[in-house]
Image 1 (cartoon, rainbow, N blue to C red):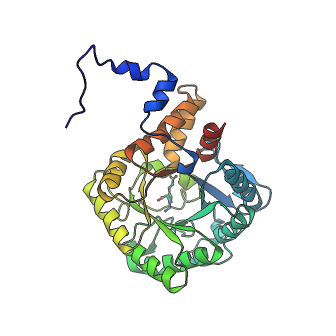
Image 2 (image 1 turned 120 degrees about the vertical axis):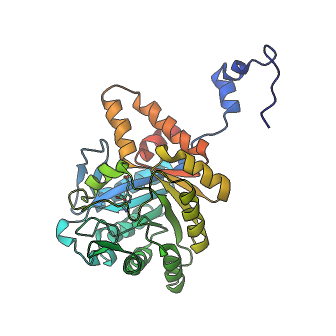
Image 3 (image 1 turned 60 degrees about the horizontal axis):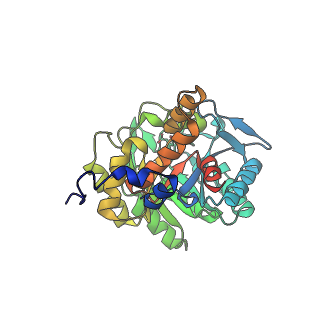
Length: 332
Ligand code: PBG
């Protein structure tokens, strides 16, 4: 049923836009600091903040610097931080064993952040790409991305992260059956309270380019990820993936990328009513920053408008490289 309205001039919709006070009263959606998850990049060394050229304003932090950043995020009220490691190319192998090394960069970073900023939730990424010589999220055997062998490895990776203190596990690999397998393994290991935010509807997207620079996977990647990540033309399939992951034990689900897939976010929230998140990915971030740096758009305003769009689409929150900047804008 269309909304009821008096005919003009009795209805003058502009009345509700006439002042900032009235606009605030009738605003349907708002962004708060609670909605932000901050993805961060960690690298080896000490005292290092290494800028990532394709992501202006984003750096790879050594663990000590990352701890400082986590403290700052906690003080801003950002509820969660998500760790992505830049792995030394020498540690990348075909068997990806570094992925479940209890002392790998990611696991050390988890422990450091839990120590430095105990009130911020720590999220991790579960996929083999940072550790794989060929840049893929799964094992490559005879040119094929192998599903079941990869899931076994993802379980080992997850348990090492959970043992290190991770609060939220984020499987981003798009292998079949991984959520159920990971949930079962967490239960058996006594990690009943570790939550899973599944990258359920993750598309094979060109928007991930700058991220692959950031984690050092761009040069490594052989081919593309289309045999496991979703086809951008599909929408019903996203709902099937979300439903499957909920049934297998995901607590929260994610759609990725963000802005170009808001229709998916909206369908997911409307049809399943589960905690739904979007990932405003590296390419989206880079586009806004690049245009802002050229003076072609007002970066700050476009940032806030893009983040609000996720709320309007029905998302409960958004992973965004803008998290600290947006939090400062919201709290100042
Ligand atoms: C790894 C992973 C990717 C991103 C998050 N986890 C890249 C990929 O799938 O190739 C992308 C994030 C971004 O672009 O900001 N599985």
